[in-house]
Amino acid sequence: MTAVETTYREALREALIDGMEADDTITLMGEEIGVYGGSYGVTNGLLDRFGAERVLDTPISEPGLVGTAVGAALTGLRPVAEIMYIDFAGLVMDQLANQAAKIRYMFGGQLGVPLLLRTQGGAGRSAAAQHSQSLEAWFAHTPGLRVVLPATVNDAYHLLREALTKPDPVIFIEHKGLYTRKGDLDKDAPDGAWGQPVRRRTGSDLVIVTYSRMVFECLAAADALEAQGISTSVIDIRSLNPLDMSPIADAVRAAGRAMVVTESCLTAGFSAELSARITEHCFDWLEEPVVRVAGEDIPIAVAPDLEAQSIPTAALIAETADWLVTRRAPQWAG
Image (tube, rainbow, N blue to C red):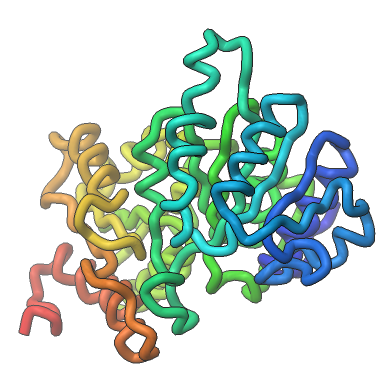
């Protein structure tokens, strides 16, 4: 099959359609996913296509929704539950962290919870502090949960299709700033294997490790760095769990320098985990300590200018990378 240009949103919809046609146990449930078509339009038209028994509009109760999905998974269905914003995940952490993630282990493998939780994270829409967070580290901290964050259109399709086949719960986090982004979709050619990072750009001086929307900020930064004579690799990890560190370690050992870039805040974010793993795997090859560029440790502001300054930009990433390689003082150093 040849690649076709489409949007991130449409790639997700295509993945749901193809998955539901291939497996009649897949059932969608969530707030306003049916008649309204989903808060970001991903499920638009699926109610008419698959009917109300497989596309369920639920009450506005995240605990009720996810609790129902866990029960449905235990009884033979493969539910896809959508929480409108990742910020509401705190309401369902008992169902996810204490139930779904642990049931296979508590029952000696006799039962599994093939639940897929779709949700949206990230800033960029002036949605303010309660609707703009990046909370993927919450889920990654819980053994038993798989955590996936596609950046490209092709990954949006293939990672969702793959997630729909897994025997354990998958947290599938879509960045709300990517839905209208266009890219090539080739249904026969995934970007990489499940749990395998993908190198989006190859360079020899520095490796930037990132995921989700920050992939594109890092690629823009790498273009700017190239103009300054700094050759930069950009690695998209694609998932937090599972995560094969081998491709990252190989790239860092060759370059000798590494940066980690995340939109989530710095303190106790997944950037710390990545930095620690890179250091453990590559200590003898690092010429400098691993540097982290992450979101500010503040609630996200509703004002667009303040919001933009609270998360990494291509300019900040490029300035920090230049400092790491050349030790030239960046603008942010005052």
